[in-house]
Picture 1 (cartoon, one colour):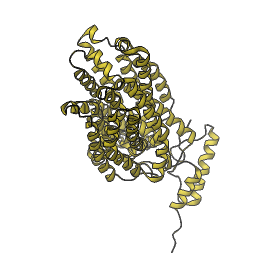
Picture 2: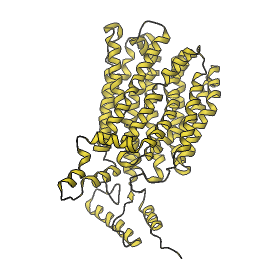
Picture 3: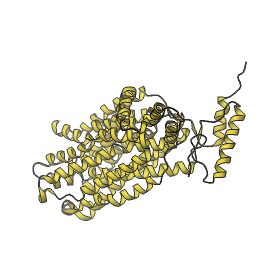
Picture 4: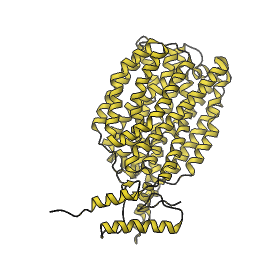
Length: 511
């Protein structure tokens, strides 16, 4: 399979068909503008785009299945690895270990992001998949505290660090991968499938934990049942790895790589400059370039992602524990309600993607942020009532706000940065925000509730604060819907769109 660096993102396998395709398009371009010898417009093949999106999203689903398991087993894992003391102390210890993985995510982002800008998106995404699967599998093999004492939580923290480090390169790479494959007018739609993958991963994790809790009971889960979801990670990791290695590199990166390495130079200095991105010092130079040139956008990215992830982790990771530990719901009931909410979000998310392609990223993001700010208190008051209908109503209010963010962020965030530093910049900004704000959400809320005498409205106030920051950040960002990614050529879905674009660009002046 060939990905064209000039006229096409994907072209037929047959060489003669490939030649005709390029000659035809260049002929059209020259007819519209005789001085135009080659075009910088990329024509996508929807089958190839869909295959790339499917592989990236399913790989993302498997990563977040691995990562989500810990959230839904937090109470059980607290009893297995941190016995003794009060239930609150055990739960805090479990959430602290959950947060530990997020402390190294910026390091993972700083390593994998520039590496992805240097050697390609595909290779790095395959590497993060391997590391996540191994880290999760090893957690399922750790002896309990009762068996080996102090070393049990130490090993847990070690493998959580492996998970966190690998996840540091996941979201930035997967969202960049999809954004660089998708045509400009459908980037929101295709990008929404990345977060659908996240929801599928969380849903799979919650579903398995719910099934095990229901069939095994609390004693068996504490004894050995908690291991089963972690042990599934091995086979799932192999499937995800297969999907990712079968993909081609993104057209935008291929074009960038060709521009950097396929230059004809006569002097040694020029040749070394052309291949400088392959040198040993390239990662440090790339990091320096990101912080020196992209810092205003990095700050904006951190604010957007921080607000987004606090609301995301509050609903999808913390809420089952909140229902069980604070409101004394049965663990299976909380997971069952969350499963239903996530299924509804999955049904809506691609529609949100289409809407932000049509109306813009900013209106949908602002709707989600304002939705959280306005509905947080009513939603938690409903949840506080305790009846099944009230809990479902409150979580649905939060879920409808969240889906506006889920269906839009994966298209909005990659567009903040230029192609040559996109993976690195997004990975660094995203993971700093997730580390400081997202991953600490369950821990901070649990600790604040303990400080404020079990005030069940603390999560609502915390959510409102995050949403307010998000509103300000969305107001400061530029609209990027239906526009080319910075540093990449325009990307269209058909030759007709390309001809229309060329015609608009080369129209004769009227006097």
